[in-house]
Length: 178
Image (tube, rainbow, N blue to C red):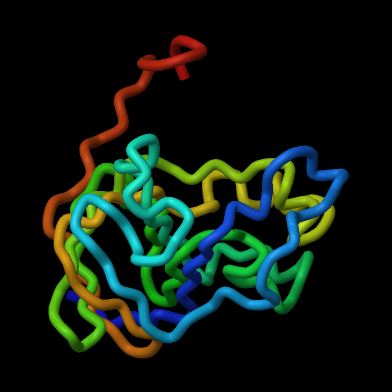
C-alpha cells in the first residue's frame, strides 16, 4: 500500500465535449469538481454523465495521474479541462492498465478494475491547449469499473495494487508486430 493524494474529483451530469472541437464545449456548470463522490459498484459515480450507462459499464470512472498533466502547456490544467473523474498524486495509473486496485480515502476501500487507457482526443487541444492531445498520448488516464460501493474524498488516501496487470503481448492487436 502506498500513500497518495486525491487532488481533484469531477462529477459531471452532462457530456460537454460533443460535436466538433472547433465549436467549443457545450454549456454547463462553471465547475463540476466536488470534494466527495459516491461510488456504486458496476455503475460509476452517482450524478456523473456515465453513471449506469450500459455502454460505459467498463469505463464509468476515469483515473488520471497529476504527474502526467501537461503543465508546460497549461500550468493550471486539471479535471475541468481533461474531463477525467479522479486525479491522483503519487501513483502512475497509466502503468497499471489491467490491474485491480484499491483506493481508500478514509471511509473504506473501493476497488477498481483498471480496464483500458483513456485515449486523449482532439478536444484536449481545445480544453487544455495546443499540443495537449499529443502530450497526453499514453498518459491520458485509465478507464475503470468500480467493483465496490463506497466514497471517494479529496485529500490523503491509501492506494494498493491488488492484482498486477497482465504483461503486454508484443505483436498482438491492430497494426501487427510492435
